[in-house]
Structures are given as C-alpha cells and as structure tokens.
Image 1 (cartoon, rainbow, N blue to C red):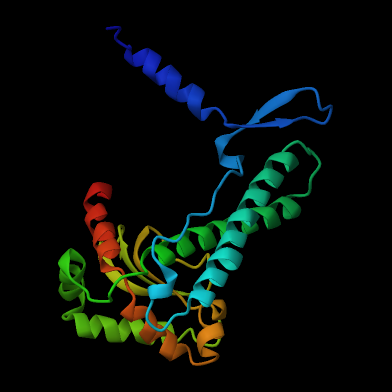
Image 2: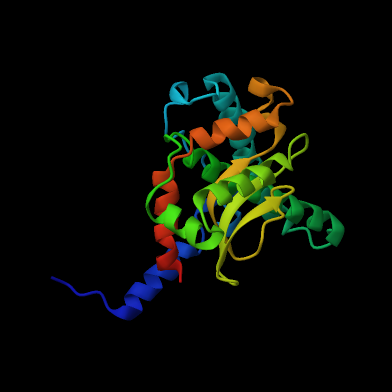
Amino acid sequence: MNKISRRDAIRGALAASAGVLAFNGESGSQTERAPMAFAGKHAPKPLSFDPTKLIGISEKLIRSHHENNYTGAVKALNAVEQRLIALAKEKDLPAYIYGDLKRQELIRTGSVVLHENYFANLGGNGKADGNAKKLIEQWFGSYEAWEAEFKRTGNALSGGSGWTILGFNQHTKGLHNYWSADHTSNAPFTVPLLVLDMYEHAYQMDYGAAAAKYVDAFMANVNWEEVNRRVESLGKLS
C-alpha cells in the first residue's frame, strides 16, 4: 500500500483550495477559475422537520418563509459573490461601489446563517433538557428567568425587524440573550445556540401584529435536541 507523504498531502490540499468555479472569460474561449471565496455555489438547506406538525405556526407561513425569504437570501449571496469576482477585473472601479457590494455580502451572509440556524432549531416539543438547560441555569439562575428574558428581548423587536439570539460569546466566555437589529448586528465571536427570527415575515401571515403570540408559539416548537448539539459543539471550538 502506497504511503502519501506530508508534502504530497499539503500539495493536494492547496490544489483543492485554489478554486472550484469555472467560468468563461470575455472571449468565451478561455476558462478561468474563481477563488472559493467567490464561488457563488451556496445551496438552500431543506427543512429538517414536518411543517404540518408545528404548534401555532402554519405550514403556509413556514414554507413561504423558507422558500421566499431564506432561499432568496441564498440566491442573493450567490449573485453577490459572482459579481465580486467579475468586478475584481475592473481596475478603475470606484471604491465606494465595491464597498456597497461588500456590504451586501455581509448582509446576505448573515441572513443565510441566521435563517439556517432558525429553521434547524424548530420542530421540537419545546421542552428544554440536557446540557443546554444546565448551561442556561448556570448563567441565568433558572430556566424560567432565562425564558422570560429571551421572550422580552424578542418582543422588544416586534413591529420592526431583527433577531433574538441566545449565544455563547467565546471572547467573554459568557452566555447571553442578544438583541440584533438586522443580519449584521451580532456580537463578535458569538456562537448562536438558539435563534428567533423577529422579522415580520416570520409571523405576520399567522399573527398579524401580535408578535408576542408568535414568540410563545416559537418557544413551544423549539428543538432542544439541536440546541444541545450546539452546546456540546462548544467544547470542540475552544
């Protein structure tokens, strides 16, 4: 059996990371490879639960949210990445134009990441247990105290937009409920453990302006098994 040397392994890794997206140049005859950072090949993740079985959140709302808002964010991120690599060839491009596109890259990335976390932590019975509950009790004194503060934070965003995120900050080594005004205003170095979408598209179809009822419904459908998985992954990141 042939052994692969460390040097060969490194060469292989570098070759794989050199680029994965092939596209035609302006002449249409020359093929170039874009860096992986600009591949624009993100694909939407399917729902991990049966949307007909949620309590207080309709299948119609979930599918609209997933297919329009989330999938739309994935497509937008792909378009932005592909546009960035195209503009890289324009030497005289004004910096402010490129800056606007980089801002869109940040916004769309945040939307994709937070939506994927949101949908993944739905589909459960809403009953907290395991290491997630223990960690919450350690930092908030009791699960009830944490839940009241998490819901209060969510309700503070009602009528507008944003996210409520139970997150562990790897810099401060603390667990907090974070108030996020949009897809970009997240606490640095924070790992999201539980994500609540407070944009109106997440609840208006079912509850109109009654955002507090949606927050209650969300809590009844939290998949704490997924939250526990995220908590347990913290040890691997430290």
